[in-house]
Image (cartoon, rainbow, N blue to C red; front, top):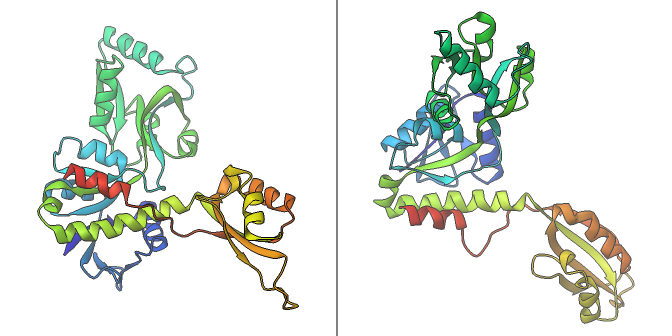
Length: 331
């Protein structure tokens, strides 16, 4: 069985379940108290539910083959593992940033340079700048890169944003998606203080997959569906009736604007008119980028189209899965 781990609770878990279902990979969990589940369309896959940090550590150790977690946790916990590889670095949800935040009453501290100066000033007075965080490795690396050498990291597994007001830290380094929680706790982000941009990602164990072609085939199926679903989000399908004397006539007029003529060109077929004549109208269908949708509609109207329909595209498959091909090369 391919051991596939997903987050067990919280917003990342909810988003992961919804995303996998949208990809045709619905996770069936008959009992909410159980920590095992299945994907009916992939009977060779055993789904395991774990805490997001545990997923990173267990994929790195090889007790799990494939998993969904946050990129921030991968960088914090798994960056030193040779066996952990990122199979898909952006699943399209769970976006956040690991940032430095200081009390908003510190009016003269607005950038990372100000924080570096403050740390040096504290050091001269015989104390250390205290930084509360759940990400000591990432914060330590960032501080070294920015010349901040004298500081103390305060482990914070609870409400990190409360640390300055409670007095056990001076500033914090924490995840934020909108900044609302920081502002509610009288904290502000600083210029240049973004340590890492993160999102949900798919990770795999190099050793366990390289040794088992059957597991590789299951991973390929999962990644094909994820990649095609992600690609489809930027496209829509347009269907319209266009008047013309022939398929060639309509095709030339539709494709006159190459940016709006679909991925490889429109599909055109005769329309059988209600009166049975079957003459003068042709059905045109094409796939266009969603951001070009209104321009495409205007183009079709300009050549006489009416009754234009716009439909969502669920999957767009390329000639091969680029992400899976990259994963194979790392194995």
